[in-house]
Image (cartoon, rainbow, N blue to C red; front, side):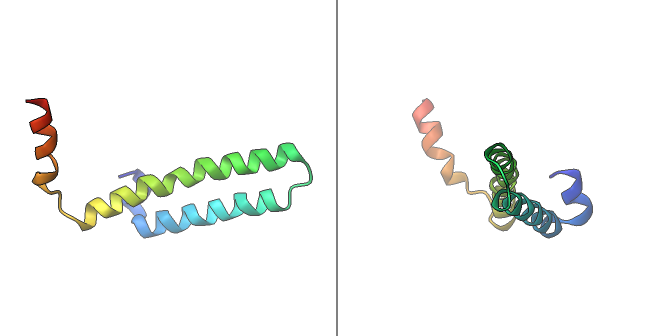
Length: 78
């Protein structure tokens, strides 16, 4: 968990990430030239990686780990 998530909670961190992503998307929509468009889309792509990480953390908070998911890997090693 990042410092921002520990202080404000995951919901606030998620909403902040949505807002920043929206700003980059709007920046891409109103861009006047191609380099600005590419820069905004690249920054939006980097910002979107937060959703993958935060989504996994949220799912890990909701569901308990299951030991049977590790069993096929152990059998494969032995």
